[in-house]
Length: 296
Ligand SMILES: [Zn+2]
Image (cartoon, rainbow, N blue to C red):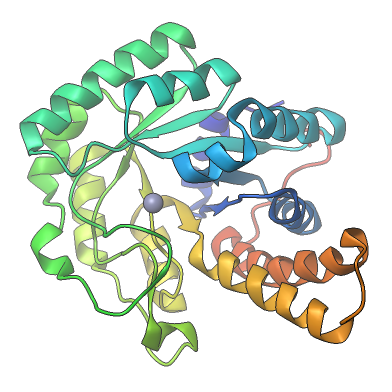
């Protein structure tokens, strides 16, 4: 079975990106896994500290491992936005493939210092685990926001990215390149789209030669996403679009079956609603990347 690092290397070589989708329940996990299998592309499941507190760190790790083993399918697990070392170590001990150690709210030197310490501690638990660091400001929660943050102030510079990568020893980098967590109200219906700084992505990739992850990609212009992948983004995070699809699917299930109380008769509509989003995004990111039957 291929490792996450091998999947990233393959995606980079083929100039495609791997989709990363956050989950906080079995319904979303099922939808993400089924979409990836239908599309025959590898996939990454992410759980933030809040999401894994709800699901249970070892429980979600067990579910993803069971899917990978039962189906022989490249599905990987990421501890998204982890703000403390004990929480990162808990995920590493539970078998996560990847940890996003997020000290980006701290001053640069302190971010480097804490991220470097996290890389060393996590690799001592599992040498093959990947660790991501973050610099710049891409806003907070994957929710619907009233007002736009000033993203220009927190953009990542290529020189700073290079220094951060060299000094911290991270495997992957989450830069701020116009991306933002969550959606503005005007983006929910697609009236406005997020736009990315493609030249900045290209420059950071050239300066660091590291795998890069685009966080907060929900609601981003499709063509910007294609260009971002061509410029060096290897993983793309989608959370808010999934959450909106989950809610719409659930509302529609309740409206269609107002007297139904059996969860497994209501929830398939939520699975279908989430699958539509995930499958559409995977088609955009994957550009024909396929899991070969032999390696699947
Ligand atoms: Zn994120």
